[in-house]
Length: 154
Image (cartoon, rainbow, N blue to C red; front, top):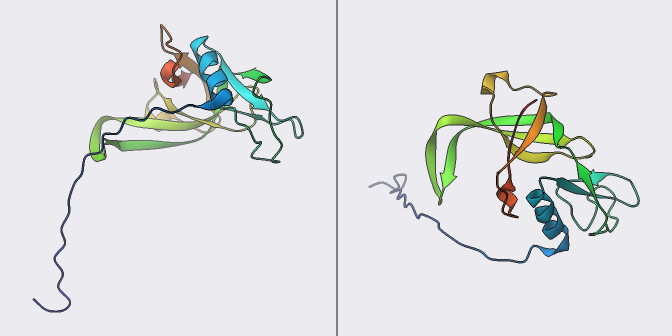
């Protein structure tokens, strides 16, 4: 073997981690809202922007937001941007998807910044910026982040 030759070894390590953590009052109120089929955002007391999901500090002007003063947004919105995925990472391994998955940045009615969500019920080639979409909730809800299942065209 010359100095320019290398032996490359690839190892695959499946990842399977379970985490339990406290989400805090902002996300707790958001999750409880999803359980009632409502999407809540925090409204900045300084600049007035509404951020979904809610957070403690406004990312636009750095003001502290109120965890109890959340506002309802959506359930409809507009696709701001999107991407089409043909693979998924499952437990650390890349798997080819049978059906392409559309991930969209959706600006909900009443919100100022987009929310990342899966878009279903439309062919990837038909998705476009400006497309009107609506939230689809799991039924029954379980007071979990997955209660907001996906979005679909209006």
